[in-house]
Amino acid sequence: NAGVMQNPRHLVRRRGQEARLRCSPMKGHSHVYWYRQLPEEGLKFMVYLQKENIIDESGMPKERFSAEFPKEGPSILRIQQVVRGDSAAYFCASSPQTAGGVEAFFGQGTRLTVV
Amino acid sequence: QKEVEQDPGPLSVPEGAIVSLNCTYSNSAFQYFMWYRQYSRKGPELLMYTYSSGNKEDGRFTAQVDKSSKYISLFIRDSQPSDSATYLCAMSRAGSNYKLTFGKGTLLTVNP
Image (cartoon, rainbow over all chains, first blue to last red; front, top):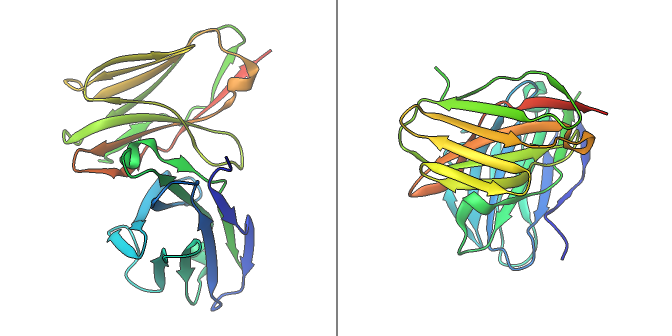
């Protein structure tokens, strides 16, 4: 049973470009969460999604950031017009419907570097 | 005041030692308490979680929650070099247990 798959593992973008981060949850998991880990900071909640629905996006910056989890395919975290401050590790986690976020399994992360 | 405080260390112990890792928190609404292990350049791995107060044991690991003091601990017995990692505490509220609030993590090194 494959774990949570994130790709790419490393992403380099120039300022002003778009970054697209993909997350495939574990088989049987219908809940996806995105977290960001800034240098010297703890993981910060960004957004919680279920298939075709955004449940809680209270941790998402108001501009340039968006997330989706379509009926088919992986969850996508999109960052438009990236800036240096967006450089961070972005982690996706998933959980089955019954467990909730307390038993979320994390992926290996995507490390975004903005140059 | 941060919601969750965790001493970043680093903490260095000899193999076989008992390790004590701790977090304090300020939000009395937290009901779920988790410990994650994160190896360098990897994703966090859930070690164990507890609901409300009390102790929970899993092999060499014991988690304790003291809600009256807003203090949680993770004990590692007979520590091994493979336990060397960053340990993260995380907490969440009932009703929104998916929204984890993490400490910054404690870097642990177990020396052979």
